Length: 343
Image (tube, rainbow, N blue to C red; front, side):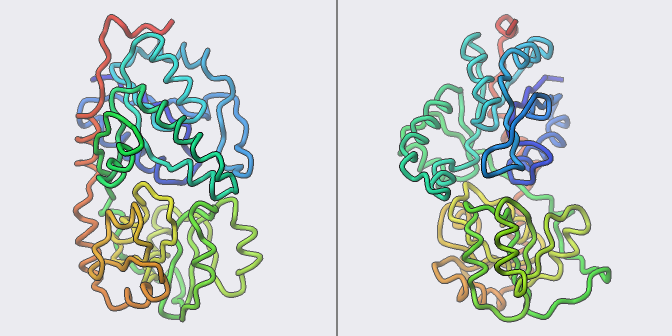
């Protein structure tokens, strides 16, 4: 078995697409001959990210990280996120001339803008370009993201298609939950400013508006909209499927996606998606078949009620984690045996 060292600043108990994607790689890569070791913030002293307490950042990780590298002697190194752990791993690999791959998962410049720090956007691009161009390849989930990054001076961009567990994400109505007034429109994502949840809450839609998810904005939004919206928080396992099985349309107002894993997950449950015509949704949704793209999310959501659940499910079946893992493994850069020592 080859040893893959996965370094990620995003890991459990966080609930997001980055964590979900690497969870699936942990399941699939052993079938392809890789033993995966994950280095994550929980192995270090941490502090919470200001304004986002569920995200923990590793403090001064380099010395301990170097020992982990030396002990594990990886055949390949993949750096998932551009945070403190990712930065320390990049520095170690560059110092010892060890090849590594990265992945561009998050538009941090949009994250900053959503928090009133738009002036830092050019600085964010400079940092991200510097970070990723130090690796042998930067993986991205879509062709449109590849083209965008190349236009901003990123090099060696390669496609890593993501997937969905269609055996898990499938419509399965359960008598455990009482029926909700129809139609049911769902916001299924993190309640954070970069996901633009406010737009969903302000839509005048009939029936029930259901909110599946949690995040730093939940208290404020629940205080403001709790009387007209059903908040159920994070859901996992069969309980998540039970709630999704009640839904008729998913409304996805985010404009900050690099892919939008929850879009494929809702499609797998036979739920059409109303979203903006922007990166992420436009790479997945076929307008008028499994969702609607446009500026008027109310119009799109209402038109989604007429779409076929079977067509939504069919779209999701094209995304598999098996195919995703094969692409990921092919893109890894194998480390030369005589240069692996980090001590």
